[in-house]
Image (cartoon, rainbow over all chains, first blue to last red; front, side):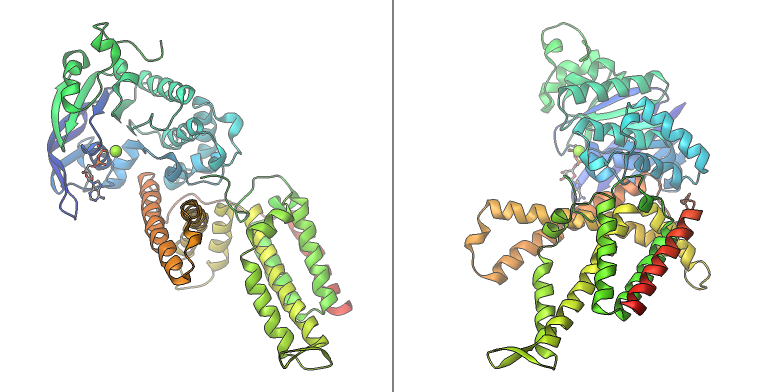
Length: 249
Length: 252
Ligand SMILES: Nc1ncnc2c1ncn2[C@@H]1O[C@H](COP(=O)(O)OP(=O)(O)O)[C@@H](O)[C@H]1O
Ligand SMILES: [Mg+2]
């Protein structure tokens, strides 16, 4: 069953920029998809359509069979989104409160909320920081907090917009491990990036975007050698003919 | 964002943190009203009481003074107006205006009251979670018809979320401009325009991103609120504060 179905999606911003041009894409439950493309190719705009932060100006986006434009709140429950900039995604005054924000919006009762907080803090390794102020966390911790805040809403699909930007080496490793772990637990994962090296070894499918269009789509092994044509750096292991090597190994 | 200004919540487990937010709001009203009625020594007592509270939760007064340094001009202005406009025995004559003893006391008193209210606000915001403030406002407005407590408390919550963002933004803009020697420009209007236009642009940009993030997590008026419950400690604190206010108004 396709959890996400995008048909002939176009988006034109009010200033006339055509950011998405006739996109067709379907995502199966449990897939791990990487969307790669240079800056300005429309990756962020595409992700924002998945949970109704932007609406199509042409075409349609279906999440779990229902149009996002018709029921954005439902789409937001199913698709959790981790933004590129963690600072603006953090809303609570403490780590704990920030994680509670989403479940409170879902009107869950206090006990359930407390349970979810302690679960996701454990999963993301933030338990000992529960009462810390989010603004004082390190870059990697902030990103994990942003992930925790989304996980607490138990979304089926997790969309990450450039999850490794502005992270140092240990931060990147922790976040990557987290994402792989979530995929193992059955979540559908969609990641945008312009830096394939870190995550491509774990993906089922690679999609290359340029100028608001899908330029290539298919299994990573098949199309990874085409990436340089579209302004994305081909990972060294692929250039060397070494196959796919996890960035964690 | 680095450490925000003094006016933000500091997690803690002090007595003041634990007091019910509704009581804290009531305390602010009681102390505020008493400071209007109290004599100078009474206001001083209230002032010292609040300073003690700040010291208890570990806020450095030095830090507060630095954060509020821009405010000193305003206080000086208020002080001057009061000091020169009161009647009574003349202390000194400056440019034909007479500074009086009464004026000096009057001016200091007004400034002390203003600072007292600021410190009360600081004490409140640093010990009360936004969620509790929202719940308290919701509770207070509940008996009033025609006003949706949920809506108003949501607005309050948003405001408390955005104020630190605006302050931080202002600080960043100011330092970015200092780094490029804006201080060499002496024209205050030029500087004001160059400061406020990018600042407002950035505030809107960031506010847009934050509200998008909130929307992505299903934010609305209807959500699980914070439970408020008054405990014996709240009532004891109320008694203590009422006694101090009575002393400062009637006996000092
Ligand atoms: N709010 C907006 N208004 C107008 N144009 C926009 C807006 N957001 C993005 N764009 C434009 O849409 C295009 C795609 O942007 P984006 O989706 O952010 O790309 P990416 O995430 O791949 O870097 C770019 O040309 C960008 O300038
Ligand atoms: Mg982007």
